Image (cartoon, rainbow, N blue to C red; front, side, top):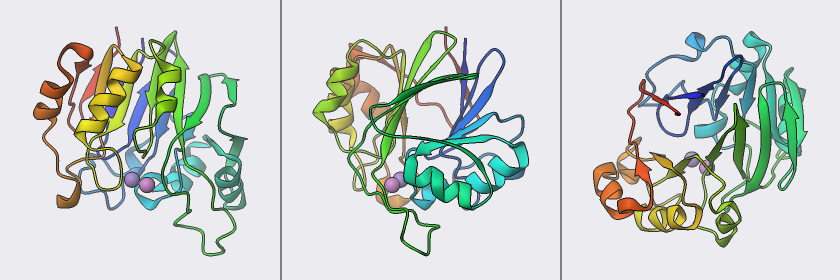
Length: 227
Ligand code: NI
Ligand code: MN
């Protein structure tokens, strides 16, 4: 079963039986990161939800050094290709079977600028990621508002990672509603406490969620093992 390691903010490494991927690898400058980007190795793919700096982060360095495939929306993948990365472009609603697992990009409601792009040519819509690996369905919502589209994933998710920090994304109340929509077995809160502006109390969130799902508020450096 996959093991999911949190590196702070929205960055997770997911290790399966014979592959490892990283989602939204912002490590350099991330106040919560437990490792530097140079410590990320053995990565088969970098999966991106959007191009904001706190998600795109160290994508180029990690992808090049590991010869990892960057999987992202078409425009964001094109940006990475122009920077010398191997890429696989996709778009919202599409899924693809990779050697490491199946990836489907789903709706997220958020900004789509690519912070590292000075040309402004690669602005696109953001996404959430549903990764199926070793039979386990993992939904990383990316940065998003609460959206009715989440109901499409009702009872189809084993592990959901979702923001609770408010201001730029869902806050705790909407995140608890998102969990009611999706009903994952386990939920890991993200995108909180990185800055004062997105401070949130994960224990209070767990109380709000109640028995809708098991909330595992893992800290940077900790791993949740799916069972
Ligand atoms: Ni963002
Ligand atoms: Mn963000």
